[in-house]
Image 1 (cartoon, helix red, strand yellow):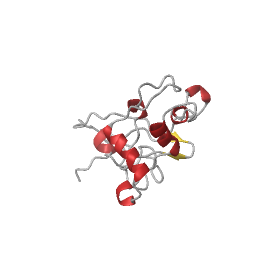
Image 2: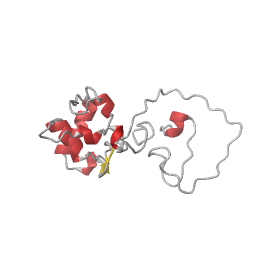
Image 3: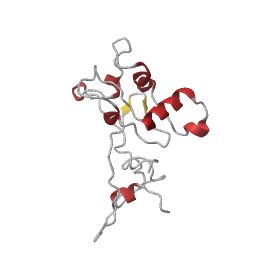
Image 4: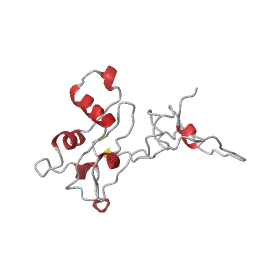
Length: 158
């Protein structure tokens, strides 16, 4: 079809039931005992940039095209989570504004931004606001896992 999927990003995608537009490794039902021999992959040239997909305990954020929020690229730093500041980019700013001000699902599509993320972007990462970035990007030593799918290139944005 000419449309990208994980296969055009990585060479091969083996997918279970459902469309191959969510994170690789997510749809595995009905897909097992797959063997391949003498496979040669060539022509993969898109220079994919993989991102972490963040999951807040009560919901996984996703953009208008089921894309991920690149929190590492959208903040000034993430080592000291109490002082982290949102710097954003045009695309992400538009998605947050759409989430806050637009009600039409014709535009919003699959957009879901967790209230904690919205609070971080619009109100800041302050003591009065409960330091929301600590929930968005928890410290590894807290035992909270940063989970979900692995990348932006394997989602609907592809």
